[in-house]
Length: 335
Image (cartoon, rainbow, N blue to C red; front, side, top):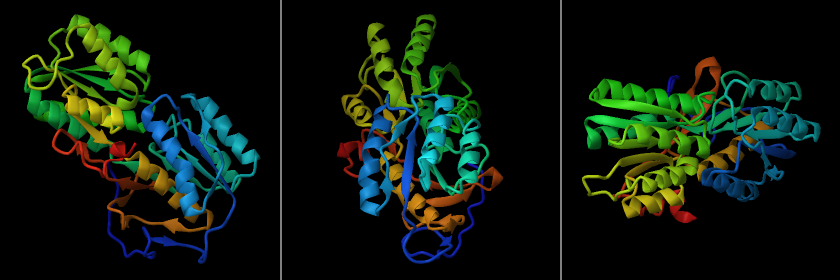
């Protein structure tokens, strides 16, 4: 992830550097827009939002589900603005298309916190997100060490999203640089389970010797991937010479169970719980007129500056394997 990470002196003991009006944060209702609810990851985030809002004294309205439609997401934002919300927490579906919603919020003088996906342009108080390029690199390293040569499949996310682009480019770049004997076959699945299933079915039929799979979103790709391999009698537990090495992203409980069973080998635990927590943290302070700066935080992350001056609190996302799958600190073990 590009951006300056110069350390600064923090102005608040409770979090990252902030300036602006003092005292308690301003009141007002907050609208929360979720991209879709077909993934256990987003279901977990959705469940955490009202709990975190209550803990932090944020008046969050019931979440709005955009159902994977970037046009609907803009309409959802405009509807919330017309209802008089004083803050918005949005998880963009499309990094470019979200600019229209951000412009509408800016005209209404309503601060926005983006979660999970950074906008390409537009004004946000903060992006709450992990380093998605690191997701791709970690998956590459696990698969590269296990496979060494042959074909692996990358089930991609939506390339209209910076997350899909970051995970794809970092994985493919790492493979080309460090594991040139491995050929990457891509499935552009756009965060949709049916596209993942159809793509893997076609690729596996044409390439029955596939040795590894990288799923960019276990929340939507895990079940169809395992079902497809099972149909081909290729779902073999770790330790067998026929085992297909599988690395995922999300950290949902179902992935942790699959790791314990030896069906998949690793996942990157994307912090759904921390996304909800710090979304409420930042929107509360942004509504109070506070601004933020690059630097270390007190919660194990770094605020970095993205192109265009957008700030991102880059939260930690650990790699999970058989070694640490039972760690109680993993959010997927608390569900």
